[in-house]
Each structure stands twice: as structure tokens, then as C-alpha cells.
Image (cartoon, rainbow, N blue to C red):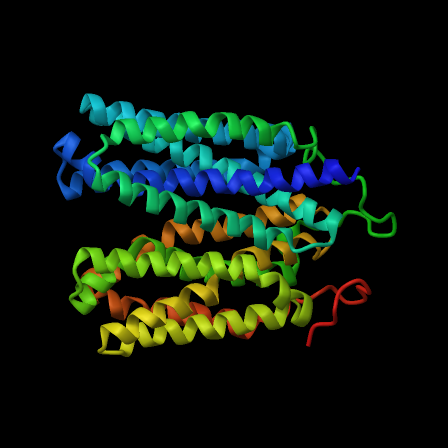
Length: 398
């Protein structure tokens, strides 16, 4: 039994490490893809819109797919489709075929969007079984994958390795790792409410979205996801345009953000065990808000660069803590995690374009006031992620 749950836990780490690696691999090579296609910046924007279309479709359909087929099938299908997208990106770039590249972005977004909801449901179940903060480490694996992919992408770009070889190599290397991970997942979980729910806690008669606490948790996740996603999409450009740094320095600042995200997620277990979810999330949101405020108002690029580290460290635990809170907020954890995770991923997709629109009119630094406001909301609502009343197995939340 111990070996089985250990294997299942390791599989959940793999399921987010591979997407992080794949995402960073093509993000670091977008200039090369653009050059292979001879596309304009606006043209690349339209191609990248394929990721948004696919992701939104996958996210909105994932819960229904999990209900019908279970997490194992959805994760396997979604990540396989994601790797197919990476392959198509490499092939399309090699052949200079824009339609193939667009199809690759579409498949990447569709596969990742559908898989990530299922991965969070699976991770929440492993966390419930083990009683350990698994989701924090699972999302840490995504950050670690992103960091590894970014470093590898920068290195391979420096030696002028063709983008097609790079992306095809990532897909080929990921396939056996994914197959090993899939075999560690229990078949059928997610098709119906977990049979281990206490008998005295029957399924609710009302829809989960009518649960006020769950809605507040969803708002918290939306706010924290916006703070994370805005940095992922806009931080390099913000440092270049807002502080007159060169592109390499802007990328270095982003790498610092990714590194502190990884550090925060893998080091968050001690904080959770000592202070509990609510205090940990509130402290993180305050730290992130301080970082964002300095980036907005400071005139010194060095101070802004250090503030970005606070930003990354502060928001690192937001997503996994909210998912964990949703999972144990009541019966039918699958529906609860699906609702909250969907809110978070929608923030990832909708938030950055909104900030881009505001940045076009007011500047990116001013646009980040929206992120500062979102973190303020998370601070105020943080008690909602505390342990359920009467839970004797968790440290009491203030």
C-alpha cells in the first residue's frame, strides 16, 4: 500500500514537471519560430491565440471528461495531446508552415488545459490520503520544469540548435517518462465521488457553486493566479519597457521570479505545518503585494529586480493552497476542485491580455495596479482557506 501511494504521488509530480518543461521549451524559442515562419509580431500574436483557444476549451470540458472517464484517462489523453502539439510546433517550424504551427499551439493548449484540472483533482486526492501538503510540491514540480526548460532553451539557443530538433527532442524524451507516470495512477478515480467520503457527510443537495466558502476560495485563487500569470507573461517586457533594461537582463529578472516560485513551493511545507493554510497564504499575499508595489512605484531597476523575488516568493503557494482548501471544504471533492481550478486557469488566460490592453494605454507598470488590488483581495479573504470547523487533524487556523 505504501509503495502504491508513493508511486501515485511521484506520478503527480511528473504530470506537472513535463508541462512546465514543454512550455518553457517553446516559449524560449518563440523568436526562432517567428524567424522560421517569417511572421510579424502581430502574426505571432495570432498564432499564440491558438494556445488560448485550446486552453479555454480544455479547461471548460475537463470536469465533464473526468466525471466520465476518470483522472487517469484525462491526464494521459491531455498530456499526450500536449506533446503532439510540441511535435507539431517543431515540424511546422522546420517546414515553415504557419497552419501546422497554429495547430501545434491549439493542441498544446487543449491538451494542457484538460489535463491540468485532472492533475489537480488527482493531487488533491493524494494529499487527502497521505495527509501531506502534496499539492504544494506538485506545483513546485511545474515551476522546476519551467526553470529547467528555460535554462535548457537559453543554452540550446546559444549553440544555435535548430528549434525543430529542440522541440522534437523534448517530445521524444517526455513520452517514456509520461508512460511510466500514467501506470502509477489508480484507474477509475474521478468517475464518481470518492467512496472514502465519511458516511455522515452525504453529498450536498445544492450545487457546489452555491457554497459561499468555496466561492471565496475560488476568488482567492483567481487573484493569486492573476498575480502569477501576469508575471509569467509580462515581467520581461515590463522590466525592458518600464526600467530600460536590455532583453537579457529582463530575462534574468524573470528567471529570478521562476527560481523563487520554485523555492517557495518546495520550501512551503514547513510553513504549512507550523502556521496552517490561512496564515501562510495571507503572509504570502502580503509579501507578493509588497513586491508588486515596489515594482510599480520604485524608480530604481535594482530595487525592482529584488522586489520581483518577493513577488515570486509571495505568490508561489497561492494556487496549491487554494486547491487544497477546496478539496476538503465539503463533500464531492472532484466537483469542488474542478470549480476552483477552473477559476484559476481562466485568470491565467484572461488576466494577461487584460493587463496588455491596460498597459498599451497606461504603461505596464501602471497596469500592475490591478495585480496589487487582486493581492489585497486575497489578503482580506485568506481566512476562507483555513481548515474546516471541527477538523481535529489539522492545526487550528486563526
